[in-house]
Length: 328
Length: 281
Image 1 (spheres, chains in turn orange, blue):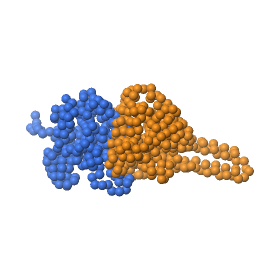
Image 2 (tube, helix red, strand yellow):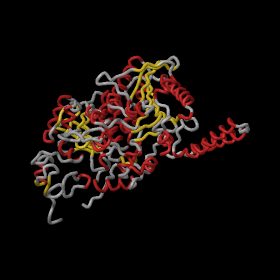
Image 3 (tube, chains in turn red, brown):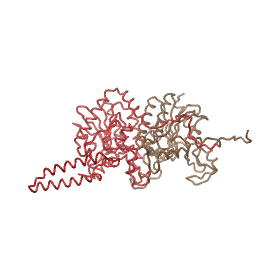
Image 4 (cartoon, one colour):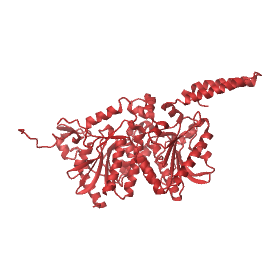
Protein backbone atom coordinates (compact mmCIF):
# COMPACT_ATOMS: atom_id res chain seq x y z
CA UNK A 1 0.00 0.00 0.00
CA UNK A 2 1.18 3.50 -0.79
CA UNK A 3 0.27 6.13 1.77
CA UNK A 4 0.11 9.79 0.90
CA UNK A 5 1.42 12.36 3.29
CA UNK A 6 -1.95 13.20 4.75
CA UNK A 7 -2.65 9.49 5.22
CA UNK A 8 0.26 9.05 7.64
CA UNK A 9 -1.97 8.48 10.69
CA UNK A 10 -3.50 5.58 8.76
CA UNK A 11 -0.12 4.13 7.98
CA UNK A 12 0.72 3.98 11.69
CA UNK A 13 -2.54 2.21 12.42
CA UNK A 14 -1.97 -0.27 9.62
CA UNK A 15 1.50 -1.01 11.00
CA UNK A 16 0.00 -1.70 14.39
CA UNK A 17 -2.59 -3.95 12.83
CA UNK A 18 0.04 -5.91 10.98
CA UNK A 19 2.08 -6.43 14.14
CA UNK A 20 -0.97 -7.51 16.05
CA UNK A 21 -1.89 -10.06 13.39
CA UNK A 22 1.66 -11.41 13.50
CA UNK A 23 1.41 -11.85 17.24
CA UNK A 24 -1.88 -13.63 16.75
CA UNK A 25 -0.39 -16.03 14.24
CA UNK A 26 2.71 -16.77 16.27
CA UNK A 27 1.31 -17.31 19.73
CA UNK A 28 -1.89 -18.57 21.13
CA UNK A 29 -3.05 -15.19 22.44
CA UNK A 30 -6.48 -14.32 21.13
CA UNK A 31 -6.13 -10.97 19.35
CA UNK A 32 -9.46 -11.05 17.50
CA UNK A 33 -11.06 -8.40 19.70
CA UNK A 34 -8.08 -6.10 19.48
CA UNK A 35 -7.93 -6.53 15.73
CA UNK A 36 -11.57 -5.59 15.46
CA UNK A 37 -11.07 -2.49 17.59
CA UNK A 38 -8.12 -1.45 15.50
CA UNK A 39 -10.02 -2.00 12.26
CA UNK A 40 -12.82 0.16 13.54
CA UNK A 41 -10.31 2.79 14.48
CA UNK A 42 -8.87 2.70 10.97
CA UNK A 43 -12.32 3.08 9.45
CA UNK A 44 -13.14 6.08 11.65
CA UNK A 45 -9.79 7.68 11.01
CA UNK A 46 -10.16 7.19 7.28
CA UNK A 47 -13.60 8.74 7.29
CA UNK A 48 -12.26 11.64 9.29
CA UNK A 49 -9.36 12.24 6.92
CA UNK A 50 -11.41 11.81 3.77
CA UNK A 51 -14.28 14.04 4.78
CA UNK A 52 -11.99 17.05 5.06
CA UNK A 53 -9.71 16.89 2.04
CA UNK A 54 -8.16 20.12 0.82
CA UNK A 55 -7.79 20.95 -2.86
CA UNK A 56 -4.14 20.03 -2.82
CA UNK A 57 -4.85 16.70 -1.09
CA UNK A 58 -7.34 15.86 -3.82
CA UNK A 59 -4.71 16.73 -6.40
CA UNK A 60 -2.39 14.26 -4.67
CA UNK A 61 -5.12 11.60 -4.60
CA UNK A 62 -5.82 12.08 -8.30
CA UNK A 63 -2.17 11.24 -8.89
CA UNK A 64 -2.04 8.29 -6.50
CA UNK A 65 0.27 5.69 -8.06
CA UNK A 66 -2.28 2.93 -7.43
CA UNK A 67 -5.20 4.83 -8.93
CA UNK A 68 -7.00 2.99 -11.75
CA UNK A 69 -6.39 4.32 -15.27
CA UNK A 70 -8.40 4.20 -18.50
CA UNK A 71 -7.51 0.62 -19.50
CA UNK A 72 -8.44 -0.67 -16.06
CA UNK A 73 -11.94 0.78 -16.38
CA UNK A 74 -12.28 -0.50 -19.93
CA UNK A 75 -11.33 -4.03 -18.85
CA UNK A 76 -13.73 -3.93 -15.93
CA UNK A 77 -16.66 -2.36 -17.76
CA UNK A 78 -16.54 -3.99 -21.18
CA UNK A 79 -17.17 -7.64 -21.92
CA UNK A 80 -14.98 -7.17 -24.98
CA UNK A 81 -12.73 -4.40 -26.27
CA UNK A 82 -10.54 -4.00 -29.31
CA UNK A 83 -7.99 -1.22 -29.28
CA UNK A 84 -7.74 0.88 -32.43
CA UNK A 85 -4.39 2.48 -33.12
CA UNK A 86 -3.08 5.43 -35.05
CA UNK A 87 -4.19 8.77 -36.41
CA UNK A 88 -3.68 7.74 -40.08
CA UNK A 89 -1.41 10.75 -40.55
CA UNK A 90 1.72 10.38 -38.51
CA UNK A 91 1.79 7.69 -35.84
CA UNK A 92 0.14 6.01 -32.89
CA UNK A 93 0.18 8.09 -29.74
CA UNK A 94 0.58 6.07 -26.57
CA UNK A 95 -0.82 8.63 -24.13
CA UNK A 96 -4.29 8.62 -25.67
CA UNK A 97 -5.83 5.21 -26.30
CA UNK A 98 -9.16 4.21 -27.72
CA UNK A 99 -11.21 1.53 -29.35
CA UNK A 100 -14.48 -0.31 -29.67
CA UNK A 101 -15.97 -1.72 -26.51
CA UNK A 102 -19.12 -3.60 -25.63
CA UNK A 103 -21.02 -2.12 -22.73
CA UNK A 104 -23.66 -4.74 -21.88
CA UNK A 105 -24.66 -5.40 -25.44
CA UNK A 106 -24.11 -1.91 -26.76
CA UNK A 107 -21.10 -0.85 -28.85
CA UNK A 108 -19.37 2.28 -27.66
CA UNK A 109 -16.19 4.07 -28.64
CA UNK A 110 -14.10 4.64 -25.54
CA UNK A 111 -11.19 7.09 -25.66
CA UNK A 112 -8.98 8.14 -22.80
CA UNK A 113 -5.61 9.27 -21.62
CA UNK A 114 -3.54 6.37 -20.32
CA UNK A 115 -0.76 6.63 -17.77
CA UNK A 116 1.82 3.93 -17.17
CA UNK A 117 1.66 1.62 -14.18
CA UNK A 118 5.42 1.40 -13.58
CA UNK A 119 8.49 3.49 -14.37
CA UNK A 120 9.04 1.93 -17.77
CA UNK A 121 5.39 2.17 -18.77
CA UNK A 122 5.08 5.71 -17.46
CA UNK A 123 7.72 6.74 -19.98
CA UNK A 124 6.11 4.66 -22.71
CA UNK A 125 2.80 6.44 -22.04
CA UNK A 126 4.60 9.79 -21.81
CA UNK A 127 3.01 10.29 -18.36
CA UNK A 128 -0.38 10.68 -19.97
CA UNK A 129 0.70 13.73 -21.97
CA UNK A 130 -0.49 13.35 -25.54
CA UNK A 131 1.06 14.71 -28.71
CA UNK A 132 -1.08 16.08 -31.56
CA UNK A 133 -1.41 12.59 -33.09
CA UNK A 134 -3.15 11.50 -29.89
CA UNK A 135 -5.83 14.16 -30.31
CA UNK A 136 -6.12 13.34 -34.01
CA UNK A 137 -6.51 9.64 -33.25
CA UNK A 138 -9.24 10.56 -30.79
CA UNK A 139 -11.01 12.59 -33.48
CA UNK A 140 -10.67 9.77 -36.00
CA UNK A 141 -12.34 7.40 -33.57
CA UNK A 142 -15.11 9.89 -32.83
CA UNK A 143 -15.79 10.28 -36.54
CA UNK A 144 -15.92 6.50 -36.82
CA UNK A 145 -18.41 6.43 -33.96
CA UNK A 146 -20.49 9.06 -35.70
CA UNK A 147 -20.75 7.06 -38.90
CA UNK A 148 -22.05 3.97 -37.15
CA UNK A 149 -24.05 5.70 -34.45
CA UNK A 150 -21.95 4.51 -31.52
CA UNK A 151 -21.98 6.68 -28.39
CA UNK A 152 -18.61 8.14 -27.40
CA UNK A 153 -17.13 7.91 -23.91
CA UNK A 154 -14.00 9.88 -23.07
CA UNK A 155 -12.00 9.34 -19.89
CA UNK A 156 -9.81 12.29 -18.90
CA UNK A 157 -6.60 11.82 -16.94
CA UNK A 158 -3.74 14.06 -17.98
CA UNK A 159 -1.30 16.55 -16.47
CA UNK A 160 -1.58 18.40 -19.79
CA UNK A 161 -0.88 18.09 -23.50
CA UNK A 162 2.82 17.50 -24.11
CA UNK A 163 4.90 20.68 -24.46
CA UNK A 164 7.65 19.66 -26.88
CA UNK A 165 9.31 20.78 -30.08
CA UNK A 166 7.72 18.08 -32.23
CA UNK A 167 4.33 18.65 -30.64
CA UNK A 168 4.51 22.28 -31.76
CA UNK A 169 5.76 21.33 -35.22
CA UNK A 170 2.81 19.05 -35.72
CA UNK A 171 0.33 21.59 -34.38
CA UNK A 172 -0.62 20.71 -30.81
CA UNK A 173 -2.85 23.79 -30.65
CA UNK A 174 -4.55 23.05 -33.96
CA UNK A 175 -5.22 19.44 -32.95
CA UNK A 176 -6.92 20.46 -29.70
CA UNK A 177 -8.85 23.30 -31.35
CA UNK A 178 -10.06 21.01 -34.13
CA UNK A 179 -11.32 18.45 -31.61
CA UNK A 180 -13.33 21.10 -29.78
CA UNK A 181 -14.82 22.33 -33.04
CA UNK A 182 -15.73 18.84 -34.28
CA UNK A 183 -16.96 17.55 -30.92
CA UNK A 184 -19.38 20.47 -30.72
CA UNK A 185 -21.09 19.17 -33.87
CA UNK A 186 -20.70 15.40 -33.42
CA UNK A 187 -24.01 13.67 -34.09
CA UNK A 188 -23.63 10.93 -31.47
CA UNK A 189 -23.81 11.26 -27.67
CA UNK A 190 -20.56 12.20 -25.91
CA UNK A 191 -20.05 11.47 -22.22
CA UNK A 192 -16.82 12.66 -20.62
CA UNK A 193 -15.52 11.72 -17.19
CA UNK A 194 -12.50 13.12 -15.38
CA UNK A 195 -11.03 10.01 -13.73
CA UNK A 196 -7.79 11.58 -12.47
CA UNK A 197 -6.11 14.79 -13.52
CA UNK A 198 -7.93 17.29 -15.71
CA UNK A 199 -5.27 19.76 -16.67
CA UNK A 200 -5.91 22.47 -19.15
CA UNK A 201 -6.25 22.22 -22.93
CA UNK A 202 -4.86 18.70 -22.85
CA UNK A 203 -7.91 17.61 -20.87
CA UNK A 204 -10.62 19.54 -22.65
CA UNK A 205 -9.17 18.44 -26.00
CA UNK A 206 -11.16 15.22 -25.50
CA UNK A 207 -13.60 16.66 -22.99
CA UNK A 208 -16.34 18.58 -24.77
CA UNK A 209 -19.36 16.44 -24.00
CA UNK A 210 -23.14 16.39 -23.70
CA UNK A 211 -22.50 15.38 -20.10
CA UNK A 212 -19.28 15.86 -18.17
CA UNK A 213 -18.71 14.13 -14.83
CA UNK A 214 -15.89 14.11 -12.37
CA UNK A 215 -14.93 11.36 -9.99
CA UNK A 216 -15.01 12.67 -6.44
CA UNK A 217 -11.25 12.99 -5.88
CA UNK A 218 -10.20 14.52 -9.17
CA UNK A 219 -9.54 18.05 -10.36
CA UNK A 220 -10.17 20.12 -13.44
CA UNK A 221 -8.40 23.40 -14.06
CA UNK A 222 -6.97 25.75 -16.61
CA UNK A 223 -3.50 25.01 -15.28
CA UNK A 224 -1.85 22.64 -12.81
CA UNK A 225 -1.27 24.06 -9.32
CA UNK A 226 2.49 23.74 -9.82
CA UNK A 227 2.58 25.74 -13.06
CA UNK A 228 0.16 28.29 -11.62
CA UNK A 229 2.46 28.74 -8.63
CA UNK A 230 5.46 29.13 -10.89
CA UNK A 231 3.80 31.75 -13.04
CA UNK A 232 1.78 33.82 -10.57
CA UNK A 233 3.96 33.43 -7.49
CA UNK A 234 7.17 33.05 -9.52
CA UNK A 235 8.13 30.04 -7.39
CA UNK A 236 7.23 26.33 -7.25
CA UNK A 237 6.56 26.54 -3.52
CA UNK A 238 3.00 27.85 -3.60
CA UNK A 239 1.29 24.86 -5.18
CA UNK A 240 -0.96 24.32 -2.16
CA UNK A 241 -2.16 27.92 -2.21
CA UNK A 242 -2.55 27.70 -5.98
CA UNK A 243 -4.63 24.53 -5.63
CA UNK A 244 -6.95 26.36 -3.22
CA UNK A 245 -7.10 29.54 -5.30
CA UNK A 246 -7.91 27.69 -8.52
CA UNK A 247 -10.99 26.06 -6.92
CA UNK A 248 -10.37 22.97 -8.96
CA UNK A 249 -12.18 20.20 -7.06
CA UNK A 250 -15.27 18.37 -8.26
CA UNK A 251 -17.39 20.15 -5.64
CA UNK A 252 -16.27 23.55 -6.89
CA UNK A 253 -16.84 22.58 -10.51
CA UNK A 254 -20.33 21.41 -9.64
CA UNK A 255 -21.08 24.65 -7.75
CA UNK A 256 -19.90 26.64 -10.75
CA UNK A 257 -22.20 24.67 -13.05
CA UNK A 258 -19.27 23.66 -15.23
CA UNK A 259 -19.86 19.91 -14.86
CA UNK A 260 -23.02 17.85 -14.81
CA UNK A 261 -22.33 15.58 -11.87
CA UNK A 262 -19.92 14.02 -9.40
CA UNK A 263 -19.41 10.28 -9.21
CA UNK A 264 -18.74 9.25 -5.61
CA UNK A 265 -15.58 7.29 -4.94
CA UNK A 266 -15.38 4.44 -2.43
CA UNK A 267 -14.02 5.45 0.98
CA UNK A 268 -10.28 5.98 0.69
CA UNK A 269 -10.45 6.86 -3.01
CA UNK A 270 -10.87 4.97 -6.28
CA UNK A 271 -7.71 2.95 -5.67
CA UNK A 272 -9.01 1.63 -2.34
CA UNK A 273 -11.76 -0.33 -4.11
CA UNK A 274 -11.16 -0.12 -7.87
CA UNK A 275 -13.68 -2.81 -8.83
CA UNK A 276 -16.42 -1.00 -6.98
CA UNK A 277 -15.34 2.25 -8.63
CA UNK A 278 -15.55 0.68 -12.09
CA UNK A 279 -19.05 -0.61 -11.31
CA UNK A 280 -20.19 2.85 -10.23
CA UNK A 281 -18.69 4.41 -13.33
CA UNK A 282 -20.31 1.88 -15.61
CA UNK A 283 -23.72 2.41 -14.02
CA UNK A 284 -23.35 6.16 -14.54
CA UNK A 285 -22.26 5.82 -18.15
CA UNK A 286 -25.06 3.46 -19.11
CA UNK A 287 -27.71 5.61 -17.51
CA UNK A 288 -26.40 8.79 -19.12
CA UNK A 289 -25.98 7.26 -22.57
CA UNK A 290 -29.55 5.97 -22.35
CA UNK A 291 -30.86 9.45 -21.53
CA UNK A 292 -28.90 11.06 -24.34
CA UNK A 293 -30.07 8.51 -26.89
CA UNK A 294 -33.64 9.68 -26.34
CA UNK A 295 -32.79 12.92 -28.13
CA UNK A 296 -32.37 13.47 -31.83
CA UNK A 297 -28.83 14.33 -32.99
CA UNK A 298 -29.97 17.88 -33.81
CA UNK A 299 -31.49 18.42 -30.38
CA UNK A 300 -28.39 16.99 -28.73
CA UNK A 301 -26.04 19.27 -30.65
CA UNK A 302 -28.17 22.30 -29.94
CA UNK A 303 -28.31 21.53 -26.22
CA UNK A 304 -24.59 20.77 -26.13
CA UNK A 305 -23.64 24.10 -27.69
CA UNK A 306 -26.16 25.96 -25.54
CA UNK A 307 -24.63 24.37 -22.46
CA UNK A 308 -21.15 25.63 -23.28
CA UNK A 309 -22.41 28.98 -24.54
CA UNK A 310 -23.82 29.82 -21.11
CA UNK A 311 -20.55 29.02 -19.32
CA UNK A 312 -18.89 32.16 -18.02
CA UNK A 313 -19.46 34.67 -15.26
CA UNK A 314 -19.47 38.38 -15.95
CA UNK A 315 -21.27 41.53 -15.02
CA UNK A 316 -23.22 43.98 -17.10
CA UNK A 317 -22.82 47.68 -16.66
CA UNK A 318 -24.97 50.31 -18.31
CA UNK A 319 -24.02 50.52 -21.99
CA UNK A 320 -22.92 54.14 -21.72
CA UNK A 321 -20.44 53.41 -18.97
CA UNK A 322 -16.93 53.31 -20.19
CA UNK A 323 -13.81 52.72 -18.27
CA UNK A 324 -12.98 56.32 -17.67
CA UNK A 325 -9.80 57.70 -16.37
CA UNK A 326 -9.95 60.64 -18.65
CA UNK A 327 -8.21 63.80 -17.78
CA UNK A 328 -9.76 65.66 -20.65
CA UNK B 1 -15.13 81.12 -26.50
CA UNK B 2 -11.58 80.00 -26.12
CA UNK B 3 -8.76 81.64 -27.88
CA UNK B 4 -7.43 78.42 -29.17
CA UNK B 5 -9.31 75.49 -30.52
CA UNK B 6 -7.66 72.14 -30.82
CA UNK B 7 -7.95 71.05 -34.39
CA UNK B 8 -6.12 67.79 -34.20
CA UNK B 9 -7.49 64.57 -32.86
CA UNK B 10 -5.50 62.74 -30.28
CA UNK B 11 -5.35 65.41 -27.68
CA UNK B 12 -8.97 65.30 -26.74
CA UNK B 13 -9.33 61.61 -27.41
CA UNK B 14 -10.75 59.68 -24.49
CA UNK B 15 -8.28 57.29 -22.91
CA UNK B 16 -10.13 54.32 -24.24
CA UNK B 17 -9.38 55.48 -27.74
CA UNK B 18 -5.74 56.02 -27.04
CA UNK B 19 -3.44 53.71 -28.82
CA UNK B 20 -1.42 50.81 -27.55
CA UNK B 21 1.66 52.30 -29.11
CA UNK B 22 4.86 54.09 -28.18
CA UNK B 23 4.35 57.53 -26.77
CA UNK B 24 6.61 60.49 -27.14
CA UNK B 25 8.51 61.72 -30.10
CA UNK B 26 11.04 58.99 -30.66
CA UNK B 27 10.79 55.30 -31.17
CA UNK B 28 13.73 53.01 -30.57
CA UNK B 29 13.22 49.66 -32.28
CA UNK B 30 13.21 46.65 -29.98
CA UNK B 31 14.89 44.58 -32.62
CA UNK B 32 17.34 46.68 -34.63
CA UNK B 33 17.78 49.33 -31.91
CA UNK B 34 17.61 52.04 -34.55
CA UNK B 35 15.77 55.22 -33.74
CA UNK B 36 13.04 56.82 -35.78
CA UNK B 37 10.33 59.31 -35.02
CA UNK B 38 6.96 58.12 -33.81
CA UNK B 39 5.43 59.86 -36.81
CA UNK B 40 7.59 57.83 -39.18
CA UNK B 41 6.57 54.72 -37.30
CA UNK B 42 2.87 55.55 -37.55
CA UNK B 43 3.12 56.40 -41.21
CA UNK B 44 4.73 53.02 -41.69
CA UNK B 45 1.79 51.08 -40.19
CA UNK B 46 3.53 50.81 -36.82
CA UNK B 47 6.40 48.89 -38.34
CA UNK B 48 9.99 49.91 -37.76
CA UNK B 49 10.94 52.05 -40.78
CA UNK B 50 14.44 50.58 -40.65
CA UNK B 51 13.91 46.82 -40.21
CA UNK B 52 10.17 46.29 -40.73
CA UNK B 53 9.72 44.92 -37.19
CA UNK B 54 5.97 44.82 -36.50
CA UNK B 55 5.44 46.70 -33.25
CA UNK B 56 2.72 45.30 -31.03
CA UNK B 57 -0.39 47.43 -31.38
CA UNK B 58 -3.83 47.39 -29.80
CA UNK B 59 -7.38 46.71 -30.89
CA UNK B 60 -8.18 50.35 -31.72
CA UNK B 61 -5.05 50.67 -33.85
CA UNK B 62 -6.28 47.73 -35.91
CA UNK B 63 -9.77 49.22 -36.16
CA UNK B 64 -8.26 52.47 -37.45
CA UNK B 65 -6.05 50.58 -39.83
CA UNK B 66 -8.81 48.41 -41.28
CA UNK B 67 -12.19 50.12 -41.12
CA UNK B 68 -13.20 52.86 -43.54
CA UNK B 69 -13.47 55.58 -40.94
CA UNK B 70 -16.26 54.98 -38.48
CA UNK B 71 -16.97 51.80 -36.64
CA UNK B 72 -19.27 50.79 -33.84
CA UNK B 73 -18.07 48.96 -30.74
CA UNK B 74 -20.28 46.14 -29.56
CA UNK B 75 -20.92 44.40 -26.25
CA UNK B 76 -19.01 47.00 -24.27
CA UNK B 77 -21.31 46.52 -21.29
CA UNK B 78 -19.69 43.26 -20.20
CA UNK B 79 -17.21 43.31 -17.31
CA UNK B 80 -15.13 40.58 -15.69
CA UNK B 81 -16.27 39.21 -12.36
CA UNK B 82 -14.06 37.76 -9.65
CA UNK B 83 -16.14 34.66 -9.12
CA UNK B 84 -13.39 32.62 -7.46
CA UNK B 85 -12.22 35.37 -5.13
CA UNK B 86 -8.85 34.71 -6.70
CA UNK B 87 -5.78 36.03 -5.04
CA UNK B 88 -2.15 35.29 -5.79
CA UNK B 89 0.37 37.98 -5.03
CA UNK B 90 -2.40 40.46 -5.79
CA UNK B 91 -6.20 40.05 -5.76
CA UNK B 92 -7.79 39.58 -9.19
CA UNK B 93 -10.07 42.58 -8.58
CA UNK B 94 -6.99 44.76 -8.14
CA UNK B 95 -5.40 43.37 -11.27
CA UNK B 96 -8.58 44.16 -13.16
CA UNK B 97 -8.79 47.67 -11.79
CA UNK B 98 -5.21 48.44 -12.66
CA UNK B 99 -5.78 47.01 -16.15
CA UNK B 100 -8.84 49.27 -16.59
CA UNK B 101 -6.87 52.26 -15.36
CA UNK B 102 -3.78 51.54 -17.38
CA UNK B 103 -5.42 50.67 -20.69
CA UNK B 104 -8.80 52.38 -20.67
CA UNK B 105 -10.13 49.13 -22.12
CA UNK B 106 -13.00 47.04 -20.78
CA UNK B 107 -11.30 43.64 -21.27
CA UNK B 108 -8.75 41.83 -23.41
CA UNK B 109 -10.93 41.84 -26.52
CA UNK B 110 -12.95 44.53 -28.23
CA UNK B 111 -15.57 43.78 -30.86
CA UNK B 112 -16.49 46.32 -33.50
CA UNK B 113 -18.46 46.38 -36.71
CA UNK B 114 -17.79 48.56 -39.68
CA UNK B 115 -16.89 48.57 -43.34
CA UNK B 116 -13.67 47.50 -45.00
CA UNK B 117 -13.56 49.00 -48.47
CA UNK B 118 -17.34 49.29 -48.23
CA UNK B 119 -17.85 45.65 -47.22
CA UNK B 120 -19.29 44.80 -43.81
CA UNK B 121 -17.04 43.07 -41.34
CA UNK B 122 -17.14 42.29 -37.64
CA UNK B 123 -13.69 42.46 -36.06
CA UNK B 124 -12.83 41.11 -32.63
CA UNK B 125 -9.37 42.32 -31.72
CA UNK B 126 -7.38 41.45 -28.62
CA UNK B 127 -5.19 43.67 -26.47
CA UNK B 128 -2.08 42.20 -24.94
CA UNK B 129 -1.85 45.08 -22.49
CA UNK B 130 -4.98 43.91 -20.73
CA UNK B 131 -3.67 41.16 -18.41
CA UNK B 132 -1.57 39.63 -21.16
CA UNK B 133 -4.51 39.47 -23.54
CA UNK B 134 -5.77 36.59 -21.43
CA UNK B 135 -9.08 34.88 -22.17
CA UNK B 136 -11.60 34.82 -19.35
CA UNK B 137 -15.40 34.81 -19.37
CA UNK B 138 -15.72 38.25 -20.98
CA UNK B 139 -13.49 37.37 -23.93
CA UNK B 140 -15.43 34.13 -24.45
CA UNK B 141 -18.80 35.83 -24.21
CA UNK B 142 -17.83 38.66 -26.56
CA UNK B 143 -16.69 36.17 -29.17
CA UNK B 144 -19.86 34.18 -28.65
CA UNK B 145 -21.98 37.32 -29.09
CA UNK B 146 -19.91 38.36 -32.10
CA UNK B 147 -20.74 35.03 -33.74
CA UNK B 148 -24.44 35.53 -33.02
CA UNK B 149 -24.23 39.05 -34.43
CA UNK B 150 -22.52 37.78 -37.58
CA UNK B 151 -25.19 35.14 -38.11
CA UNK B 152 -28.00 37.65 -37.50
CA UNK B 153 -26.53 40.21 -39.91
CA UNK B 154 -24.92 37.74 -42.33
CA UNK B 155 -21.53 39.36 -41.77
CA UNK B 156 -18.16 37.65 -41.88
CA UNK B 157 -15.93 37.56 -38.79
CA UNK B 158 -12.29 38.48 -38.32
CA UNK B 159 -10.61 37.74 -35.01
CA UNK B 160 -7.22 39.33 -34.38
CA UNK B 161 -5.54 37.23 -31.70
CA UNK B 162 -2.87 38.54 -29.37
CA UNK B 163 -2.82 36.63 -26.13
CA UNK B 164 -0.79 34.68 -23.61
CA UNK B 165 -3.66 32.19 -23.31
CA UNK B 166 -6.42 31.48 -20.83
CA UNK B 167 -6.79 33.74 -17.78
CA UNK B 168 -5.67 31.81 -14.72
CA UNK B 169 -7.67 33.97 -12.31
CA UNK B 170 -10.89 32.54 -13.69
CA UNK B 171 -9.55 28.98 -13.62
CA UNK B 172 -11.98 26.46 -15.11
CA UNK B 173 -14.24 29.23 -16.39
CA UNK B 174 -11.38 30.34 -18.62
CA UNK B 175 -10.74 26.77 -19.70
CA UNK B 176 -14.37 26.35 -20.71
CA UNK B 177 -14.13 29.44 -22.92
CA UNK B 178 -12.03 27.28 -25.25
CA UNK B 179 -14.95 24.89 -25.67
CA UNK B 180 -17.42 27.76 -25.82
CA UNK B 181 -15.66 29.74 -28.56
CA UNK B 182 -14.96 26.64 -30.64
CA UNK B 183 -18.58 25.50 -30.32
CA UNK B 184 -19.87 28.93 -31.34
CA UNK B 185 -17.51 29.03 -34.34
CA UNK B 186 -18.91 25.69 -35.44
CA UNK B 187 -22.29 27.44 -35.63
CA UNK B 188 -20.81 30.20 -37.77
CA UNK B 189 -19.36 27.57 -40.09
CA UNK B 190 -22.73 25.85 -40.31
CA UNK B 191 -24.29 29.18 -41.26
CA UNK B 192 -21.75 29.29 -44.11
CA UNK B 193 -20.19 32.55 -42.99
CA UNK B 194 -16.44 32.93 -43.28
CA UNK B 195 -14.19 33.28 -40.27
CA UNK B 196 -10.77 34.82 -40.80
CA UNK B 197 -8.19 34.34 -38.05
CA UNK B 198 -5.27 36.73 -37.88
CA UNK B 199 -2.59 35.77 -35.38
CA UNK B 200 -0.29 38.48 -34.13
CA UNK B 201 2.60 38.58 -31.70
CA UNK B 202 2.08 36.71 -29.40
CA UNK B 203 -0.66 34.10 -29.74
CA UNK B 204 -0.21 31.18 -27.37
CA UNK B 205 -1.93 28.74 -25.03
CA UNK B 206 -5.68 28.29 -24.84
CA UNK B 207 -6.32 30.99 -27.41
CA UNK B 208 -4.22 29.24 -30.07
CA UNK B 209 -5.75 25.91 -29.03
CA UNK B 210 -9.26 27.19 -29.63
CA UNK B 211 -10.50 30.01 -31.85
CA UNK B 212 -7.17 31.24 -33.25
CA UNK B 213 -6.44 27.98 -35.10
CA UNK B 214 -9.98 27.51 -36.37
CA UNK B 215 -10.12 30.09 -39.14
CA UNK B 216 -11.37 29.21 -42.59
CA UNK B 217 -8.29 31.21 -43.41
CA UNK B 218 -5.49 31.28 -40.84
CA UNK B 219 -2.90 33.99 -41.35
CA UNK B 220 -0.37 35.91 -39.33
CA UNK B 221 1.82 38.96 -39.19
CA UNK B 222 5.52 38.31 -39.82
CA UNK B 223 7.62 36.82 -37.05
CA UNK B 224 4.78 36.59 -34.55
CA UNK B 225 5.22 34.07 -31.75
CA UNK B 226 2.47 31.48 -32.21
CA UNK B 227 2.23 28.23 -30.31
CA UNK B 228 0.53 26.08 -27.75
CA UNK B 229 3.10 25.87 -24.97
CA UNK B 230 5.29 28.88 -24.30
CA UNK B 231 8.97 28.62 -25.25
CA UNK B 232 10.09 28.76 -21.62
CA UNK B 233 7.88 25.81 -20.64
CA UNK B 234 9.15 23.76 -23.58
CA UNK B 235 12.76 24.57 -22.78
CA UNK B 236 12.24 23.50 -19.17
CA UNK B 237 10.48 20.30 -20.17
CA UNK B 238 12.90 19.01 -22.78
CA UNK B 239 15.98 20.66 -21.28
CA UNK B 240 17.49 21.69 -24.58
CA UNK B 241 17.70 24.90 -26.53
CA UNK B 242 15.02 25.71 -29.04
CA UNK B 243 15.85 26.05 -32.73
CA UNK B 244 16.00 29.53 -34.16
CA UNK B 245 12.72 30.81 -35.50
CA UNK B 246 10.87 28.16 -33.50
CA UNK B 247 7.14 28.98 -33.11
CA UNK B 248 7.39 32.05 -35.33
CA UNK B 249 4.91 32.72 -38.13
CA UNK B 250 7.37 31.52 -40.77
CA UNK B 251 7.81 28.24 -38.85
CA UNK B 252 4.05 27.70 -38.72
CA UNK B 253 3.69 28.48 -42.40
CA UNK B 254 6.41 25.95 -43.17
CA UNK B 255 4.70 23.28 -41.06
CA UNK B 256 1.37 23.82 -42.69
CA UNK B 257 -0.63 25.69 -40.06
CA UNK B 258 -0.95 29.07 -41.75
CA UNK B 259 -2.37 29.95 -45.13
CA UNK B 260 -0.09 32.94 -45.51
CA UNK B 261 1.85 35.68 -43.75
CA UNK B 262 0.84 39.25 -44.35
CA UNK B 263 2.79 42.46 -43.89
CA UNK B 264 0.75 44.97 -41.92
CA UNK B 265 0.97 47.38 -44.79
CA UNK B 266 -0.98 44.96 -46.98
CA UNK B 267 -3.40 43.88 -44.27
CA UNK B 268 -6.39 45.94 -45.31
CA UNK B 269 -5.97 45.13 -48.96
CA UNK B 270 -5.66 41.41 -48.21
CA UNK B 271 -8.74 41.30 -46.02
CA UNK B 272 -10.64 43.34 -48.52
CA UNK B 273 -9.69 40.83 -51.22
CA UNK B 274 -10.82 37.90 -49.06
CA UNK B 275 -14.16 39.63 -48.51
CA UNK B 276 -14.46 40.09 -52.25
CA UNK B 277 -13.75 36.39 -52.86
CA UNK B 278 -16.41 35.35 -50.39
CA UNK B 279 -18.61 37.98 -52.01
CA UNK B 280 -21.13 38.40 -49.27
CA UNK B 281 -22.75 41.54 -50.58
